[in-house]
Image (cartoon, rainbow, N blue to C red; front, side):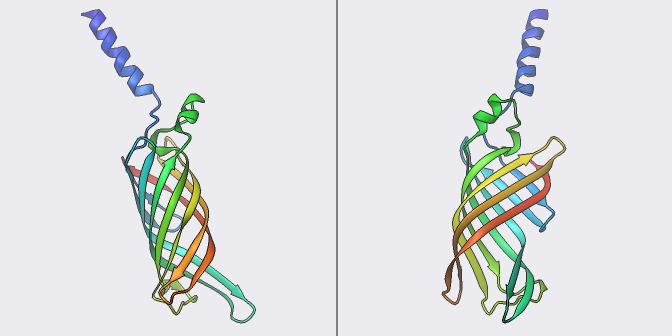
Length: 176
């Protein structure tokens, strides 16, 4: 009986302290530009990330001066986490999708600002393109996510243009 309890204890302990190198589904709230985000695991290394919230835009020109706006938006990403095993081998955290990823990004943003004076003549604007990112979720539940990319911007007037993508999210993991 003592041996059986010892074996059970060792098995449970090794599972509890092992690093997981597969993605998982999770829900988080972001603070910098408030949003709610759900990341759905679709395979061992891939997720679909949906983020509903607000975004920031700034424009400066010699003709119209400076203007900014805060807009409602929806962003979807397909993420492939490429370094989970490498992080686990170095005893770095990989749970809660803490790793680096490459992503395909699509977003849509409203044309009228909630706050600000940067008004577009369009009803919406969008972005499609690739991105590189890193995500870290710390033991306290604090979450850091950085996205960098370059893609095609567009609007309902038919305008198309190349534009950079920069995304920074600071928030908390709420549920897993």
